[in-house]
Image (tube, rainbow, N blue to C red; front, side, top):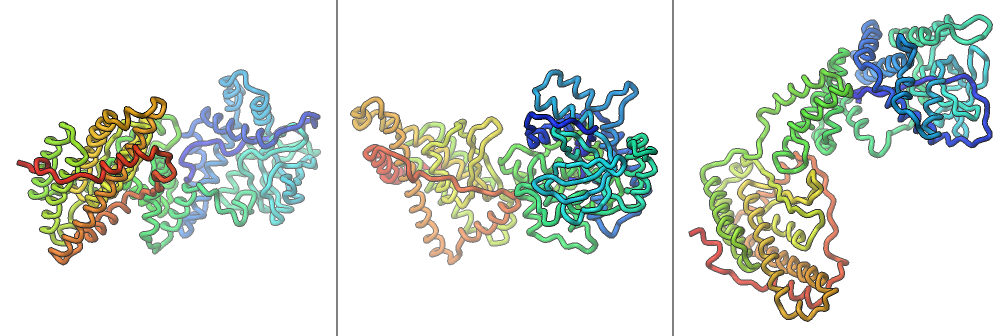
Length: 600
Protein backbone atom coordinates (compact mmCIF):
# COMPACT_ATOMS: atom_id res chain seq x y z
CA UNK A 1 0.00 0.00 0.00
CA UNK A 2 1.09 3.64 -0.37
CA UNK A 3 3.39 3.64 2.66
CA UNK A 4 0.38 2.83 4.84
CA UNK A 5 2.65 1.59 7.59
CA UNK A 6 5.77 3.44 8.71
CA UNK A 7 8.88 1.40 8.00
CA UNK A 8 12.51 2.23 7.44
CA UNK A 9 13.06 2.29 3.69
CA UNK A 10 16.63 3.50 3.47
CA UNK A 11 19.80 3.42 5.56
CA UNK A 12 23.46 4.34 5.01
CA UNK A 13 26.78 2.87 4.03
CA UNK A 14 30.19 3.09 5.63
CA UNK A 15 33.85 3.67 4.96
CA UNK A 16 35.53 0.85 3.14
CA UNK A 17 36.27 -1.99 5.54
CA UNK A 18 39.19 -4.34 5.31
CA UNK A 19 38.53 -7.69 3.71
CA UNK A 20 38.36 -10.42 6.27
CA UNK A 21 39.36 -14.04 5.94
CA UNK A 22 36.17 -15.12 7.67
CA UNK A 23 33.41 -16.03 5.15
CA UNK A 24 30.45 -13.65 5.19
CA UNK A 25 26.94 -15.01 4.80
CA UNK A 26 25.73 -11.97 2.89
CA UNK A 27 22.17 -13.23 2.48
CA UNK A 28 21.76 -13.59 6.22
CA UNK A 29 23.44 -10.24 6.80
CA UNK A 30 21.03 -8.49 4.46
CA UNK A 31 18.07 -10.17 6.17
CA UNK A 32 19.27 -8.88 9.53
CA UNK A 33 19.76 -5.39 8.08
CA UNK A 34 16.16 -5.31 6.86
CA UNK A 35 14.88 -6.49 10.25
CA UNK A 36 16.93 -3.85 12.08
CA UNK A 37 15.72 -1.10 9.75
CA UNK A 38 12.14 -1.95 10.62
CA UNK A 39 12.95 -1.97 14.33
CA UNK A 40 14.83 1.33 14.10
CA UNK A 41 11.76 2.94 12.53
CA UNK A 42 10.09 2.63 15.95
CA UNK A 43 12.48 5.32 17.22
CA UNK A 44 11.48 7.99 14.71
CA UNK A 45 8.43 10.23 14.58
CA UNK A 46 5.91 9.36 11.83
CA UNK A 47 4.59 12.92 12.07
CA UNK A 48 8.06 14.28 11.30
CA UNK A 49 8.42 11.98 8.29
CA UNK A 50 4.98 12.92 7.01
CA UNK A 51 5.54 16.64 7.51
CA UNK A 52 8.84 16.56 5.65
CA UNK A 53 7.36 14.62 2.73
CA UNK A 54 4.39 16.95 2.49
CA UNK A 55 6.66 19.98 2.48
CA UNK A 56 8.53 18.63 -0.53
CA UNK A 57 5.39 17.54 -2.36
CA UNK A 58 3.64 20.88 -1.83
CA UNK A 59 5.94 22.40 -4.44
CA UNK A 60 6.06 19.43 -6.78
CA UNK A 61 4.51 19.60 -10.22
CA UNK A 62 0.98 18.07 -10.02
CA UNK A 63 0.32 14.86 -11.92
CA UNK A 64 -3.47 14.63 -11.62
CA UNK A 65 -3.77 13.00 -15.05
CA UNK A 66 -1.50 10.12 -14.03
CA UNK A 67 -2.52 8.56 -10.70
CA UNK A 68 0.14 5.86 -11.01
CA UNK A 69 2.93 8.42 -11.18
CA UNK A 70 1.32 10.35 -8.32
CA UNK A 71 1.37 7.29 -6.10
CA UNK A 72 5.02 6.59 -6.92
CA UNK A 73 5.87 10.22 -6.14
CA UNK A 74 4.23 9.98 -2.71
CA UNK A 75 6.01 6.69 -2.00
CA UNK A 76 9.35 8.24 -3.02
CA UNK A 77 8.77 11.25 -0.78
CA UNK A 78 7.90 9.14 2.26
CA UNK A 79 10.88 6.86 1.67
CA UNK A 80 13.33 9.75 1.31
CA UNK A 81 11.94 11.49 4.39
CA UNK A 82 12.26 8.25 6.38
CA UNK A 83 15.88 7.97 5.27
CA UNK A 84 16.73 11.45 6.53
CA UNK A 85 14.96 11.07 9.86
CA UNK A 86 16.55 7.67 10.48
CA UNK A 87 20.08 8.96 9.98
CA UNK A 88 19.82 12.44 11.46
CA UNK A 89 21.38 12.51 14.96
CA UNK A 90 19.43 13.93 17.87
CA UNK A 91 20.75 16.81 20.01
CA UNK A 92 22.77 14.22 21.95
CA UNK A 93 24.33 12.90 18.74
CA UNK A 94 22.49 9.56 18.79
CA UNK A 95 20.70 8.17 15.72
CA UNK A 96 17.77 5.77 15.67
CA UNK A 97 20.28 2.93 15.28
CA UNK A 98 22.20 4.01 18.39
CA UNK A 99 18.97 3.97 20.39
CA UNK A 100 18.06 0.59 18.91
CA UNK A 101 21.47 -0.81 19.89
CA UNK A 102 20.94 0.30 23.49
CA UNK A 103 17.55 -1.37 23.61
CA UNK A 104 18.80 -4.64 22.11
CA UNK A 105 21.81 -4.94 24.41
CA UNK A 106 23.90 -8.03 23.75
CA UNK A 107 23.07 -9.68 20.43
CA UNK A 108 24.45 -12.55 18.36
CA UNK A 109 27.42 -12.07 16.01
CA UNK A 110 25.31 -11.89 12.83
CA UNK A 111 22.94 -9.30 14.24
CA UNK A 112 25.86 -7.35 15.70
CA UNK A 113 27.54 -7.25 12.27
CA UNK A 114 24.33 -6.00 10.65
CA UNK A 115 23.86 -3.30 13.29
CA UNK A 116 27.49 -2.22 12.91
CA UNK A 117 27.08 -1.98 9.13
CA UNK A 118 24.02 0.25 9.54
CA UNK A 119 25.78 2.55 12.02
CA UNK A 120 28.75 2.91 9.65
CA UNK A 121 26.69 3.44 6.51
CA UNK A 122 27.34 6.51 4.32
CA UNK A 123 25.42 8.59 1.81
CA UNK A 124 27.49 8.52 -1.40
CA UNK A 125 27.45 9.85 -4.95
CA UNK A 126 28.02 6.95 -7.35
CA UNK A 127 27.95 5.84 -10.97
CA UNK A 128 27.07 2.41 -12.36
CA UNK A 129 29.98 0.98 -14.36
CA UNK A 130 28.77 -2.58 -15.02
CA UNK A 131 25.43 -4.39 -14.53
CA UNK A 132 24.86 -7.16 -12.03
CA UNK A 133 26.86 -10.33 -12.62
CA UNK A 134 26.86 -13.21 -10.15
CA UNK A 135 24.87 -11.01 -7.78
CA UNK A 136 27.36 -8.12 -7.79
CA UNK A 137 27.09 -4.78 -9.63
CA UNK A 138 30.15 -2.61 -10.28
CA UNK A 139 29.92 1.03 -9.26
CA UNK A 140 32.37 3.88 -8.64
CA UNK A 141 32.30 6.67 -6.10
CA UNK A 142 32.19 9.90 -8.14
CA UNK A 143 33.87 11.86 -5.33
CA UNK A 144 36.72 9.59 -4.19
CA UNK A 145 37.02 7.52 -7.41
CA UNK A 146 36.82 4.38 -5.25
CA UNK A 147 35.56 1.13 -6.87
CA UNK A 148 32.40 -0.13 -5.19
CA UNK A 149 31.33 -3.76 -5.67
CA UNK A 150 27.68 -3.73 -4.57
CA UNK A 151 25.60 -6.81 -3.80
CA UNK A 152 22.56 -6.47 -6.04
CA UNK A 153 20.91 -8.82 -8.53
CA UNK A 154 18.67 -6.35 -10.38
CA UNK A 155 20.98 -3.82 -12.05
CA UNK A 156 20.58 -4.14 -15.83
CA UNK A 157 22.45 -2.73 -18.81
CA UNK A 158 20.12 0.31 -18.99
CA UNK A 159 21.59 1.53 -15.66
CA UNK A 160 25.20 1.63 -16.88
CA UNK A 161 26.72 5.15 -16.73
CA UNK A 162 23.79 6.39 -14.64
CA UNK A 163 24.75 8.59 -11.67
CA UNK A 164 22.89 8.05 -8.42
CA UNK A 165 22.88 8.73 -4.71
CA UNK A 166 22.27 6.01 -2.15
CA UNK A 167 23.46 4.78 1.21
CA UNK A 168 26.01 1.99 1.22
CA UNK A 169 26.80 -0.35 4.09
CA UNK A 170 29.91 -2.56 4.15
CA UNK A 171 29.41 -6.29 4.56
CA UNK A 172 32.89 -7.01 5.88
CA UNK A 173 34.53 -8.60 2.85
CA UNK A 174 35.23 -5.50 0.76
CA UNK A 175 31.76 -5.44 -0.77
CA UNK A 176 28.77 -3.24 -0.02
CA UNK A 177 25.00 -3.43 0.15
CA UNK A 178 22.50 -0.69 -0.59
CA UNK A 179 20.26 0.17 2.33
CA UNK A 180 16.77 1.00 1.07
CA UNK A 181 16.21 2.99 -2.08
CA UNK A 182 18.54 4.45 -4.66
CA UNK A 183 17.93 7.74 -6.47
CA UNK A 184 19.15 8.05 -10.08
CA UNK A 185 20.12 11.60 -11.09
CA UNK A 186 19.66 13.50 -14.32
CA UNK A 187 22.08 16.32 -15.18
CA UNK A 188 20.32 18.87 -12.95
CA UNK A 189 20.16 16.48 -9.99
CA UNK A 190 23.82 15.55 -10.42
CA UNK A 191 24.74 19.24 -10.35
CA UNK A 192 22.94 19.64 -7.02
CA UNK A 193 24.85 16.69 -5.55
CA UNK A 194 28.21 17.92 -6.92
CA UNK A 195 27.74 21.25 -5.17
CA UNK A 196 28.38 19.40 -1.90
CA UNK A 197 31.68 17.78 -3.00
CA UNK A 198 34.71 18.71 -0.91
CA UNK A 199 37.76 20.01 -2.72
CA UNK A 200 40.37 17.39 -3.55
CA UNK A 201 37.93 14.46 -3.71
CA UNK A 202 37.74 14.10 0.06
CA UNK A 203 34.07 13.15 0.26
CA UNK A 204 30.85 15.13 0.62
CA UNK A 205 30.41 18.27 2.65
CA UNK A 206 27.64 17.54 5.19
CA UNK A 207 26.12 14.38 3.64
CA UNK A 208 22.82 14.93 5.46
CA UNK A 209 22.34 18.36 3.90
CA UNK A 210 23.40 16.95 0.54
CA UNK A 211 20.78 14.19 0.83
CA UNK A 212 18.08 16.67 1.77
CA UNK A 213 18.96 19.01 -1.10
CA UNK A 214 18.99 16.18 -3.65
CA UNK A 215 15.72 14.70 -2.40
CA UNK A 216 14.01 18.10 -2.44
CA UNK A 217 15.19 18.80 -5.99
CA UNK A 218 14.22 15.37 -7.31
CA UNK A 219 10.72 15.50 -5.86
CA UNK A 220 10.06 19.00 -7.13
CA UNK A 221 11.57 18.71 -10.59
CA UNK A 222 11.67 14.98 -11.32
CA UNK A 223 14.59 12.77 -12.33
CA UNK A 224 15.44 9.57 -14.17
CA UNK A 225 13.33 6.46 -13.66
CA UNK A 226 15.52 3.41 -14.10
CA UNK A 227 14.21 -0.17 -13.73
CA UNK A 228 16.33 -1.96 -11.15
CA UNK A 229 17.31 1.30 -9.41
CA UNK A 230 14.34 3.42 -8.34
CA UNK A 231 11.71 1.36 -10.16
CA UNK A 232 11.01 -2.40 -10.22
CA UNK A 233 13.11 -4.40 -12.71
CA UNK A 234 11.56 -4.95 -16.12
CA UNK A 235 9.24 -7.95 -16.16
CA UNK A 236 8.79 -7.85 -12.37
CA UNK A 237 5.32 -9.06 -11.42
CA UNK A 238 5.60 -9.27 -7.66
CA UNK A 239 5.57 -12.44 -5.61
CA UNK A 240 2.79 -15.03 -5.85
CA UNK A 241 1.33 -13.80 -2.56
CA UNK A 242 1.69 -10.07 -3.29
CA UNK A 243 -2.05 -9.43 -3.02
CA UNK A 244 -1.57 -5.99 -1.47
CA UNK A 245 0.36 -4.96 -4.60
CA UNK A 246 -2.47 -6.24 -6.78
CA UNK A 247 -4.93 -4.10 -4.83
CA UNK A 248 -2.66 -1.10 -5.39
CA UNK A 249 -2.69 -1.75 -9.13
CA UNK A 250 -6.46 -2.09 -9.05
CA UNK A 251 -6.74 1.24 -7.22
CA UNK A 252 -4.59 2.87 -9.89
CA UNK A 253 -6.83 1.47 -12.60
CA UNK A 254 -9.99 2.64 -10.84
CA UNK A 255 -8.48 6.11 -10.40
CA UNK A 256 -8.14 6.64 -14.14
CA UNK A 257 -10.73 9.03 -15.66
CA UNK A 258 -13.80 7.17 -16.88
CA UNK A 259 -12.59 3.83 -15.50
CA UNK A 260 -15.24 1.13 -15.17
CA UNK A 261 -15.35 -1.13 -12.13
CA UNK A 262 -15.67 -4.65 -13.42
CA UNK A 263 -17.65 -7.15 -11.28
CA UNK A 264 -14.65 -9.48 -11.45
CA UNK A 265 -12.57 -6.75 -9.76
CA UNK A 266 -15.13 -6.48 -6.98
CA UNK A 267 -15.08 -10.24 -6.49
CA UNK A 268 -11.27 -10.20 -6.35
CA UNK A 269 -11.42 -7.54 -3.62
CA UNK A 270 -13.90 -9.66 -1.66
CA UNK A 271 -11.60 -12.68 -1.93
CA UNK A 272 -8.69 -10.65 -0.49
CA UNK A 273 -10.72 -9.26 2.43
CA UNK A 274 -8.93 -9.81 5.73
CA UNK A 275 -8.10 -7.78 8.82
CA UNK A 276 -4.57 -6.93 7.66
CA UNK A 277 -5.67 -6.11 4.12
CA UNK A 278 -8.41 -3.73 5.19
CA UNK A 279 -6.09 -1.95 7.65
CA UNK A 280 -3.60 -1.36 4.84
CA UNK A 281 -6.32 -0.07 2.52
CA UNK A 282 -7.64 2.33 5.17
CA UNK A 283 -4.10 3.63 5.66
CA UNK A 284 -3.75 4.11 1.91
CA UNK A 285 -6.99 6.12 1.77
CA UNK A 286 -5.73 8.41 4.53
CA UNK A 287 -2.25 8.85 3.05
CA UNK A 288 -3.39 9.59 -0.49
CA UNK A 289 -6.08 11.96 0.82
CA UNK A 290 -3.56 13.88 2.93
CA UNK A 291 -1.30 14.32 -0.09
CA UNK A 292 -4.06 15.61 -2.33
CA UNK A 293 -4.39 12.53 -4.54
CA UNK A 294 -8.16 12.79 -4.80
CA UNK A 295 -8.92 10.27 -7.54
CA UNK A 296 -6.57 7.66 -6.10
CA UNK A 297 -7.91 8.23 -2.59
CA UNK A 298 -11.47 7.73 -3.85
CA UNK A 299 -10.42 4.48 -5.53
CA UNK A 300 -8.87 3.17 -2.31
CA UNK A 301 -12.01 4.23 -0.41
CA UNK A 302 -14.16 2.19 -2.83
CA UNK A 303 -11.92 -0.84 -2.19
CA UNK A 304 -12.19 -0.28 1.58
CA UNK A 305 -15.98 -0.18 1.29
CA UNK A 306 -16.09 -3.54 -0.50
CA UNK A 307 -13.69 -5.18 1.96
CA UNK A 308 -15.45 -3.90 5.07
CA UNK A 309 -18.83 -4.90 3.65
CA UNK A 310 -17.44 -8.37 2.98
CA UNK A 311 -16.07 -8.73 6.52
CA UNK A 312 -19.41 -7.49 7.85
CA UNK A 313 -21.30 -10.08 5.81
CA UNK A 314 -18.97 -12.87 6.92
CA UNK A 315 -19.39 -11.94 10.57
CA UNK A 316 -23.18 -11.87 10.11
CA UNK A 317 -22.93 -15.36 8.60
CA UNK A 318 -20.99 -16.63 11.61
CA UNK A 319 -17.78 -16.99 9.59
CA UNK A 320 -14.40 -15.58 10.51
CA UNK A 321 -13.46 -13.43 13.48
CA UNK A 322 -12.98 -9.97 11.91
CA UNK A 323 -16.23 -8.07 12.28
CA UNK A 324 -16.39 -4.28 12.19
CA UNK A 325 -15.77 -3.96 15.93
CA UNK A 326 -12.66 -6.12 15.57
CA UNK A 327 -11.43 -3.92 12.73
CA UNK A 328 -11.97 -0.78 14.81
CA UNK A 329 -10.04 -2.17 17.78
CA UNK A 330 -7.13 -3.24 15.56
CA UNK A 331 -7.16 0.12 13.77
CA UNK A 332 -7.00 2.04 17.05
CA UNK A 333 -4.07 -0.12 18.19
CA UNK A 334 -2.17 0.42 14.92
CA UNK A 335 -2.70 4.20 15.07
CA UNK A 336 -1.58 4.31 18.71
CA UNK A 337 1.58 2.40 17.77
CA UNK A 338 2.31 4.81 14.92
CA UNK A 339 1.85 2.11 12.28
CA UNK A 340 -1.09 3.84 10.58
CA UNK A 341 -1.86 7.55 10.08
CA UNK A 342 -4.48 9.04 12.43
CA UNK A 343 -6.63 9.94 9.41
CA UNK A 344 -7.38 6.24 8.89
CA UNK A 345 -9.78 6.37 11.84
CA UNK A 346 -11.95 8.97 10.13
CA UNK A 347 -11.90 6.95 6.92
CA UNK A 348 -13.13 3.88 8.79
CA UNK A 349 -15.99 5.79 10.41
CA UNK A 350 -17.04 7.21 7.02
CA UNK A 351 -17.14 3.76 5.45
CA UNK A 352 -18.90 2.30 8.47
CA UNK A 353 -21.65 4.89 8.17
CA UNK A 354 -22.07 3.97 4.51
CA UNK A 355 -22.54 0.37 5.61
CA UNK A 356 -25.40 1.34 7.90
CA UNK A 357 -27.95 -0.14 5.48
CA UNK A 358 -25.96 -3.33 4.79
CA UNK A 359 -27.96 -6.50 5.31
CA UNK A 360 -27.84 -7.85 8.82
CA UNK A 361 -27.82 -11.46 9.89
CA UNK A 362 -31.52 -11.35 10.55
CA UNK A 363 -32.65 -9.90 7.25
CA UNK A 364 -36.32 -9.23 6.56
CA UNK A 365 -38.69 -11.95 7.72
CA UNK A 366 -42.39 -12.19 7.04
CA UNK A 367 -44.91 -13.48 9.56
CA UNK A 368 -45.20 -16.91 7.93
CA UNK A 369 -41.42 -17.32 7.92
CA UNK A 370 -41.22 -16.35 11.60
CA UNK A 371 -43.88 -18.94 12.37
CA UNK A 372 -42.01 -21.62 10.41
CA UNK A 373 -38.72 -20.96 12.19
CA UNK A 374 -40.57 -21.02 15.50
CA UNK A 375 -41.96 -24.47 14.72
CA UNK A 376 -38.47 -25.74 13.86
CA UNK A 377 -37.14 -24.39 17.13
CA UNK A 378 -40.02 -26.05 19.00
CA UNK A 379 -39.14 -29.38 17.41
CA UNK A 380 -35.53 -28.87 18.43
CA UNK A 381 -36.54 -28.32 22.05
CA UNK A 382 -38.57 -31.55 22.03
CA UNK A 383 -35.92 -33.78 20.48
CA UNK A 384 -32.34 -32.52 20.68
CA UNK A 385 -32.17 -32.01 24.41
CA UNK A 386 -33.79 -35.39 25.10
CA UNK A 387 -31.41 -37.33 22.90
CA UNK A 388 -32.56 -39.51 20.03
CA UNK A 389 -31.71 -42.51 17.95
CA UNK A 390 -30.52 -42.29 14.40
CA UNK A 391 -33.96 -43.38 13.16
CA UNK A 392 -35.70 -40.69 15.18
CA UNK A 393 -33.28 -38.03 13.91
CA UNK A 394 -34.02 -38.82 10.29
CA UNK A 395 -37.76 -38.98 10.96
CA UNK A 396 -37.63 -35.48 12.43
CA UNK A 397 -35.65 -34.32 9.41
CA UNK A 398 -38.40 -35.57 7.10
CA UNK A 399 -41.00 -33.63 9.06
CA UNK A 400 -38.97 -30.41 8.91
CA UNK A 401 -38.37 -30.91 5.19
CA UNK A 402 -42.11 -31.25 4.68
CA UNK A 403 -42.69 -27.95 6.47
CA UNK A 404 -40.01 -26.20 4.44
CA UNK A 405 -41.26 -27.53 1.13
CA UNK A 406 -44.80 -26.47 1.90
CA UNK A 407 -43.60 -22.95 2.72
CA UNK A 408 -41.25 -22.79 -0.30
CA UNK A 409 -43.95 -23.74 -2.76
CA UNK A 410 -46.09 -20.88 -1.48
CA UNK A 411 -43.40 -18.36 -2.47
CA UNK A 412 -42.97 -16.79 -5.88
CA UNK A 413 -39.54 -16.45 -7.52
CA UNK A 414 -39.54 -12.79 -6.48
CA UNK A 415 -40.35 -13.68 -2.87
CA UNK A 416 -37.41 -16.09 -2.82
CA UNK A 417 -35.00 -13.48 -4.15
CA UNK A 418 -36.16 -10.95 -1.58
CA UNK A 419 -35.13 -13.16 1.32
CA UNK A 420 -31.77 -12.28 2.84
CA UNK A 421 -29.53 -15.30 3.29
CA UNK A 422 -28.16 -16.06 6.73
CA UNK A 423 -25.30 -17.99 8.16
CA UNK A 424 -25.12 -19.87 11.42
CA UNK A 425 -22.00 -21.24 13.06
CA UNK A 426 -22.09 -24.49 15.02
CA UNK A 427 -19.21 -24.85 17.45
CA UNK A 428 -18.05 -28.43 17.92
CA UNK A 429 -15.66 -27.78 20.81
CA UNK A 430 -13.26 -30.24 19.14
CA UNK A 431 -9.88 -29.58 17.57
CA UNK A 432 -9.92 -32.69 15.40
CA UNK A 433 -12.34 -33.85 12.72
CA UNK A 434 -14.49 -36.85 13.67
CA UNK A 435 -16.82 -39.23 11.80
CA UNK A 436 -19.89 -37.11 12.62
CA UNK A 437 -18.40 -34.26 10.55
CA UNK A 438 -18.65 -36.42 7.44
CA UNK A 439 -22.42 -35.91 7.65
CA UNK A 440 -22.21 -32.10 7.33
CA UNK A 441 -22.32 -31.90 3.49
CA UNK A 442 -25.35 -34.19 3.34
CA UNK A 443 -27.09 -32.28 6.14
CA UNK A 444 -26.52 -28.95 4.36
CA UNK A 445 -27.61 -30.29 0.97
CA UNK A 446 -30.75 -31.85 2.47
CA UNK A 447 -31.96 -28.37 3.37
CA UNK A 448 -30.57 -26.50 0.31
CA UNK A 449 -27.75 -24.87 2.27
CA UNK A 450 -24.04 -24.47 1.72
CA UNK A 451 -21.66 -25.49 4.51
CA UNK A 452 -17.99 -25.16 5.28
CA UNK A 453 -15.70 -25.83 8.19
CA UNK A 454 -13.22 -23.44 9.75
CA UNK A 455 -11.16 -22.96 12.88
CA UNK A 456 -12.48 -20.64 15.58
CA UNK A 457 -10.27 -18.10 17.36
CA UNK A 458 -9.56 -20.72 20.04
CA UNK A 459 -8.48 -23.28 17.43
CA UNK A 460 -11.55 -25.50 17.67
CA UNK A 461 -13.53 -26.72 14.66
CA UNK A 462 -16.80 -25.09 13.72
CA UNK A 463 -19.26 -25.61 10.88
CA UNK A 464 -21.05 -22.75 9.15
CA UNK A 465 -24.40 -23.36 7.44
CA UNK A 466 -25.40 -20.67 4.92
CA UNK A 467 -28.71 -20.30 3.10
CA UNK A 468 -32.25 -19.00 3.41
CA UNK A 469 -33.25 -18.37 7.04
CA UNK A 470 -35.58 -21.32 7.61
CA UNK A 471 -33.25 -23.70 5.76
CA UNK A 472 -30.33 -22.66 7.97
CA UNK A 473 -32.38 -23.18 11.12
CA UNK A 474 -33.40 -26.62 9.86
CA UNK A 475 -29.81 -27.57 8.95
CA UNK A 476 -28.54 -26.67 12.38
CA UNK A 477 -31.38 -28.62 13.95
CA UNK A 478 -30.63 -31.70 11.88
CA UNK A 479 -26.88 -31.50 12.59
CA UNK A 480 -27.59 -31.44 16.32
CA UNK A 481 -29.96 -34.38 15.93
CA UNK A 482 -27.24 -36.30 14.11
CA UNK A 483 -24.79 -35.51 16.92
CA UNK A 484 -27.23 -36.90 19.49
CA UNK A 485 -27.86 -39.93 17.29
CA UNK A 486 -24.11 -40.58 17.20
CA UNK A 487 -24.02 -40.52 21.00
CA UNK A 488 -26.99 -42.87 21.29
CA UNK A 489 -25.91 -45.33 18.60
CA UNK A 490 -22.27 -45.37 19.74
CA UNK A 491 -23.33 -46.11 23.31
CA UNK A 492 -25.52 -48.94 21.99
CA UNK A 493 -22.59 -50.33 19.97
CA UNK A 494 -20.28 -50.28 22.98
CA UNK A 495 -22.88 -52.17 24.99
CA UNK A 496 -23.19 -54.86 22.30
CA UNK A 497 -21.55 -58.20 21.68
CA UNK A 498 -19.23 -57.05 18.88
CA UNK A 499 -17.52 -54.47 21.08
CA UNK A 500 -17.31 -56.84 24.05
CA UNK A 501 -15.59 -59.47 21.92
CA UNK A 502 -12.91 -57.03 20.77
CA UNK A 503 -9.47 -57.12 22.41
CA UNK A 504 -8.98 -53.98 24.52
CA UNK A 505 -6.19 -52.49 22.31
CA UNK A 506 -8.48 -52.37 19.26
CA UNK A 507 -11.69 -51.15 20.90
CA UNK A 508 -10.93 -47.51 20.11
CA UNK A 509 -10.41 -48.42 16.45
CA UNK A 510 -13.63 -50.40 16.51
CA UNK A 511 -15.58 -47.41 17.87
CA UNK A 512 -14.11 -45.14 15.20
CA UNK A 513 -14.90 -47.69 12.49
CA UNK A 514 -18.48 -47.87 13.70
CA UNK A 515 -18.71 -44.06 13.58
CA UNK A 516 -17.39 -43.92 10.03
CA UNK A 517 -19.91 -46.51 8.92
CA UNK A 518 -22.72 -44.70 10.75
CA UNK A 519 -21.81 -41.41 9.02
CA UNK A 520 -21.75 -43.13 5.61
CA UNK A 521 -25.17 -44.67 6.26
CA UNK A 522 -26.79 -41.43 7.45
CA UNK A 523 -25.33 -39.43 4.54
CA UNK A 524 -26.52 -42.04 2.04
CA UNK A 525 -30.02 -42.05 3.49
CA UNK A 526 -30.18 -38.24 3.45
CA UNK A 527 -29.19 -38.23 -0.22
CA UNK A 528 -31.89 -40.79 -1.01
CA UNK A 529 -34.54 -38.78 0.84
CA UNK A 530 -33.44 -35.58 -0.88
CA UNK A 531 -33.74 -37.14 -4.34
CA UNK A 532 -37.24 -38.35 -3.51
CA UNK A 533 -38.21 -34.87 -2.27
CA UNK A 534 -36.94 -33.17 -5.40
CA UNK A 535 -38.86 -35.54 -7.65
CA UNK A 536 -42.05 -35.05 -5.62
CA UNK A 537 -41.72 -31.26 -5.68
CA UNK A 538 -41.21 -31.13 -9.44
CA UNK A 539 -44.09 -33.52 -10.02
CA UNK A 540 -46.57 -31.63 -7.83
CA UNK A 541 -45.76 -28.07 -8.88
CA UNK A 542 -43.94 -28.30 -12.20
CA UNK A 543 -41.35 -25.98 -10.66
CA UNK A 544 -37.80 -26.78 -9.56
CA UNK A 545 -37.69 -25.14 -6.13
CA UNK A 546 -34.22 -26.53 -5.43
CA UNK A 547 -32.71 -24.83 -8.48
CA UNK A 548 -34.45 -21.55 -7.64
CA UNK A 549 -33.07 -21.60 -4.10
CA UNK A 550 -29.59 -22.53 -5.29
CA UNK A 551 -29.40 -19.45 -7.50
CA UNK A 552 -30.31 -17.16 -4.60
CA UNK A 553 -27.90 -18.81 -2.15
CA UNK A 554 -24.94 -18.96 -4.54
CA UNK A 555 -25.36 -15.29 -5.47
CA UNK A 556 -25.27 -14.31 -1.80
CA UNK A 557 -22.38 -16.66 -1.08
CA UNK A 558 -20.29 -14.90 -3.74
CA UNK A 559 -20.61 -11.70 -1.70
CA UNK A 560 -18.72 -13.33 1.17
CA UNK A 561 -15.64 -13.64 -1.04
CA UNK A 562 -14.69 -16.98 0.48
CA UNK A 563 -12.50 -19.51 -1.26
CA UNK A 564 -13.00 -23.14 -0.33
CA UNK A 565 -10.71 -26.13 -0.36
CA UNK A 566 -12.26 -29.58 -0.39
CA UNK A 567 -11.37 -31.67 2.66
CA UNK A 568 -10.24 -35.20 2.07
CA UNK A 569 -13.03 -37.66 2.79
CA UNK A 570 -12.93 -40.98 4.53
CA UNK A 571 -11.41 -42.77 1.57
CA UNK A 572 -8.19 -44.42 2.58
CA UNK A 573 -9.03 -44.64 6.27
CA UNK A 574 -8.34 -48.01 7.84
CA UNK A 575 -11.42 -49.49 9.53
CA UNK A 576 -12.45 -52.72 11.17
CA UNK A 577 -14.82 -54.25 8.63
CA UNK A 578 -17.34 -55.76 11.04
CA UNK A 579 -17.66 -52.60 13.14
CA UNK A 580 -17.89 -50.43 10.02
CA UNK A 581 -20.65 -52.58 8.55
CA UNK A 582 -22.62 -52.44 11.79
CA UNK A 583 -22.41 -48.65 11.75
CA UNK A 584 -23.36 -48.44 8.09
CA UNK A 585 -26.32 -50.74 8.63
CA UNK A 586 -27.46 -48.62 11.58
CA UNK A 587 -27.26 -45.53 9.40
CA UNK A 588 -29.40 -47.05 6.68
CA UNK A 589 -31.81 -49.14 8.71
CA UNK A 590 -34.35 -46.78 10.12
CA UNK A 591 -38.03 -46.21 9.62
CA UNK A 592 -40.18 -43.14 10.10
CA UNK A 593 -41.28 -42.85 13.73
CA UNK A 594 -44.60 -41.03 13.96
CA UNK A 595 -44.01 -39.86 17.54
CA UNK A 596 -41.07 -37.72 16.49
CA UNK A 597 -41.54 -34.77 14.22
CA UNK A 598 -45.15 -33.95 15.14
CA UNK A 599 -45.27 -30.51 16.65
CA UNK A 600 -48.31 -31.34 18.63
